Image (cartoon, rainbow, N blue to C red; front, side):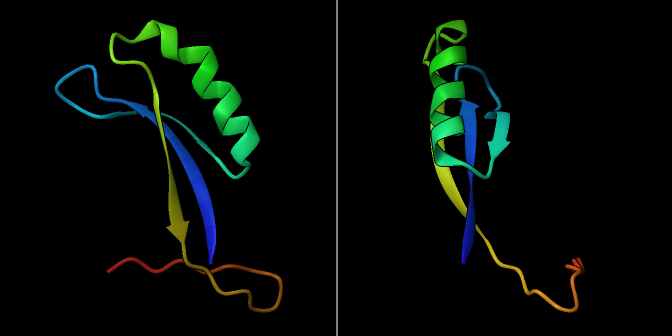
Length: 63
């Protein structure tokens, strides 16, 4: 299963997503760059993204 890396902060009432990356190294670099802007720093977590490859396209259905 593929995963993306989510950079976010929890310094306020809402957990604000700052960026979503498909490359772990880029996510960590961005986290280091933006962390000083937030009192609690920036957090990073992987998030699994299920997908199925069919004839060169990906179809997403919600609901």
